[in-house]
Length: 131
Image (cartoon, rainbow, N blue to C red; front, top):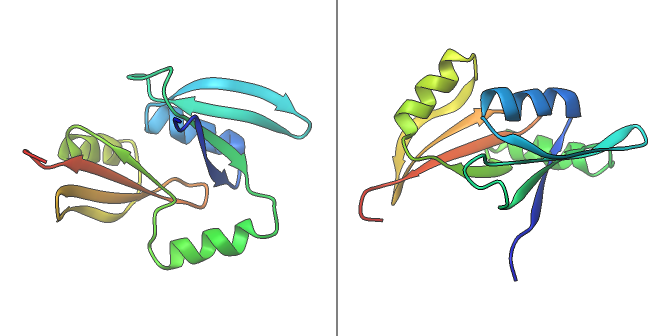
């Protein structure tokens, strides 16, 4: 068994697509119109056949309270691994990305948290040497 698709609820698919591709660097895997929305997935360019992230419309009544509670408690909706957190943090800052948690040590990882502009917090982690 493998994870094929994971989703993150977004307030606006077009804005999410722009952020996740132009800022975070993911590439579009599927963009299929489905009525007023799209089946819109992105993947890491380092692993184009890997797990897809579905940028899912967050219109279900349960989504708003769920996302608001996560953000209020500082809980990321998704976590991405990077090779060099300091470099990624600097690159994203230069692109205007807002961080809610600056890079810090957290056990076996270094981590930071950013705002995806679509109602979610995103965690970036770098594995520490030897972990």
